[in-house]
Image (tube, rainbow, N blue to C red; front, side, top):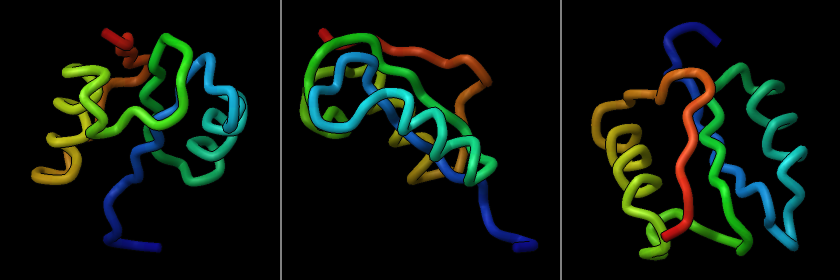
Length: 76
């Protein structure tokens, strides 16, 4: 749809509930950006597990700024 902002998908490489490949596929299907998070857990956005993730998500929510292609963060 014209005029809508790009989407941000956050996917964790070792998520036991939602496979990382699913996040990659979703980002591709939506034509949006993917933020890869290196680590093992489920749910990372605003959980306090990664300042890097929170910064990227804040930039998206506040300014609709998407990360560069290949962007990665790690769990702390």
